[in-house]
Image (cartoon, rainbow, N blue to C red):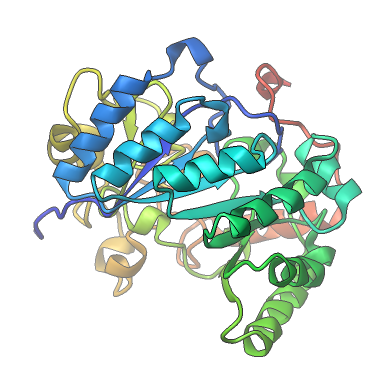
Length: 365
Ligand code: FES
């Protein structure tokens, strides 16, 4: 058994509050209320413990992290600890002065999410009127503040036709990196799967568009490309492997191996209010549960890819099979793989149902 290494990065989900209502949000269906959020001092202690533990990167996320008025203070604490800080934001709540203040506090990098390139469609998908135009403006503030910018574009059947323009937008805004991420289906996205699943032909066109743009824009823009699991032959190494590289602290202080882990039944996730990050990382049952390869069923256990994909995504495997240890159906060797691909093809061929927006209360619709 290999020794457990310290985590590389911490995802700080400061809040689940967000002005946007994206129907593929990675937050759980049951979101934490504002009253349960960790306060400034508790977050600062988390960052102190993270730095001691060996974490190098802190990603501020949410919900929308800019909802928190103490964001600058939290960035400053991380900067003082020598941690690299990245703000993952919808951007709509940030003005020029706030971006300058964040840069002054020591922020290193900004990732702005876009819902497409067509303003009307993007605003419809995000459920926020005027949001797209605001993002374009804030991207300018990021560059003015001298910070590197990444654009995050979550793609699906309702915006995939805009991919070429999204790539053009990233170049126009001076982004150094574009993350083209097809929707991953758990949480809100799973509820909206039939409305979001692309056809295989759409996916193939998108892949060709990305490959051509990568060649054309070499040296100008780096494009990361995440394919939809349902059309893949092998699963992704979700989070780089459970409990190997990342930890996630939720708004109320629960420490999770991934952003969707709270969907897994029968598991207890410890809280920074009760135990140190170090003890949780090295000693909690939840982090141990799917760490390494010892927990794997066959055929994963004897697969030569087991230390590449680390058994795929536990949250997806559970969502699709109802079993925590199941082989991720995204794998071509999983029993349910053919059915999964068939369901994706069926859903993408039918008419898209109405979107269920991410709002407290709509998860039960
Ligand atoms: Fe939880 Fe993939 S999202 S393991």
